Image (cartoon, rainbow, N blue to C red):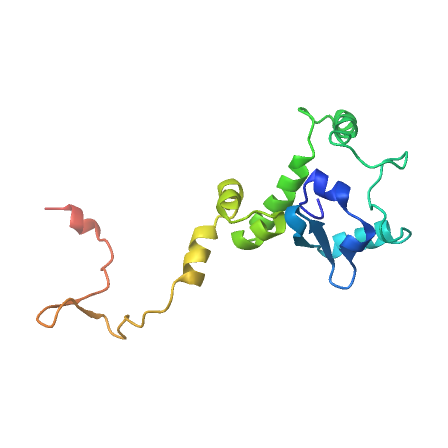
Length: 181
């Protein structure tokens, strides 16, 4: 939950992929590219602890037998933990990634930042799954993105053309007598 990383990404992490100075993980992607995942303070503390006694070149996460985690090795421990906690249906690893992104969205983090943290190529997938969690997302995005046009006059007179203008007056309060007649 500290990273929002995919299970396979975490399984490939090596000691040198954690940068304590910047508080980031360098997640190796295909074609020699890397994605940088930013850690919050609690995540930095956890990774500092997990990497304290391992050498460069060693994986950060290994099974209890010292072997790398395989494709579906995580599911049995998750099933057992879910059973002990009474969670039905049992959680899968991807829900931890989803929870990470959900917390960011609910905190008002822009969708582009959430997408980058998750390694999405653009914001489409992020918006599809997480924008509903940020109730002010649409309003905030429009207000931050729309430029000031300088068209609002300082008065309540709005000119539609040189020959015509409309004076906007405050609405009067509703009176019970308005219903009579």
